[in-house]
Amino acid sequence: AMLSGSLDAWVFDSPGFPKEKIEGVCADKNKYQSLVMLAGGLIGGLVADIGIRLNFALSIAAALIFTLLVRINIMEKRSNAGHGGFVSKMRAGVQKMGEVISDSFICCVRDRQVRTIIIFSGLMTFSISAVFVSWSPLLNSYPGHNYSVIGFAWMLMQLAKAGGNAFSKLFIGQIKRHLPLTGLVIGVIVCAVAMTDSFYAALVFILMFEFILGIANPLREAMLNSHITSKARATILSFQSMFSSLMYFISMLITGWIASVFSLQTALLFSGLSLI
Image (cartoon, rainbow, N blue to C red):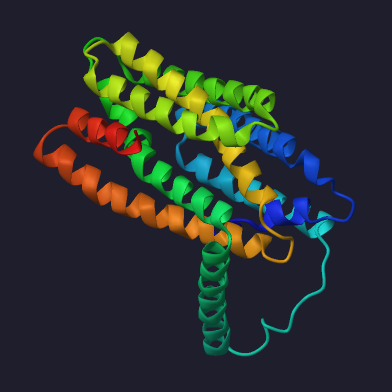
């Protein structure tokens, strides 16, 4: 959460970075993230058979490597905001959060495109959050399938998302036309997942969901980054992440209640219809 927007802003606002490459970079970034998640899942599964605590040790090692790479590659002037005691640092942090919200709100009011993209991202997060937390228990609820099959399904999902990321490059320059369509298609697919009573049909629909989401995410990121200035980029991206996190929290409360009172399928149907 603390990294939200920082790396994107560093890349897109680096000297000499051509603006027309933003869409392609967003597609590549999401594609490699999906592939790395696939590799991490495979390694994590193998390591868990030895000792599940070792996965946490690997995570710490990965975080240290990431920190080292950032230290080597990202060099910029340090601000004086970090000086002082703990209380003053916390006060400065809260003040900075207030500035992010205030500046982003002003930007959203002034720029209709930015406002529309942030709202779209928040609504999509609200609608699809239930899928992320329910696909595993949903597939596991079908008789005759164990957890190893669920793990294999997760691998296929990451491959489907990476395929969608790569496919999104075909829509470079046509984002306005295709981004709303991806939301509609995802909503229909989630409704189909909720209404099917077959393991294999549900798996196919979930893979389709991941593929279309793999197209939508880079398009959304590229469209937002193309409409914000370098000065406001990190601030707007942080605000967009905060708003989406709020929508995720609200979605979990509502869909969790629906799943408890009615059923998991009903919660998924609500999610799909809300996105449509």
